[in-house]
Length: 235
Image (tube, rainbow, N blue to C red):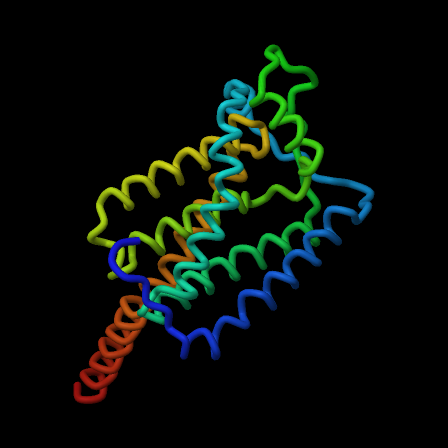
């Protein structure tokens, strides 16, 4: 991503264990949830979802998601000099994905938006058929496709090393938007799932990337309170 790649071996030896350990935990948990039989699933759907047409072309950015997330995590793990940027990304992904697992366990959910038949027959429709066989329309809230895409986009846009690469920033932004759109145009998720993921992205961004501003705000409130107590004691 511009210039000579720098591999931080010190960071590798001390901090990269988080990725495989959490990855194994997540995949085992997700597999359990997908195969766990429940008596009832909450059907998530809105009227707006019915107005969004099915479009198989979006299967391209949908599958690009896997490469996008993997490439971003690998870059921040191996080539990002600023370890804080690495922790910001990993913490964001872990919070969102763990919350998704908890919600799926406590509140089983799904949707019934997938088309029963396809009007067209082409390679993209074949890819969608394959997608439907490997990914059930259950455990959809919030959308991890949306959450992880936006989390990676934020990490790349916030990276001091990558901010100057305007072409990269533009491409990442457009890819993220196309992935978000793909989730609803492929009938993989509902608008509600997307909105929930974006709200979670906003919360994580404020807590993880803007925590210093939050601490400063809390500190200022504490100082104001001390001043009020001081003045009340005097007068």
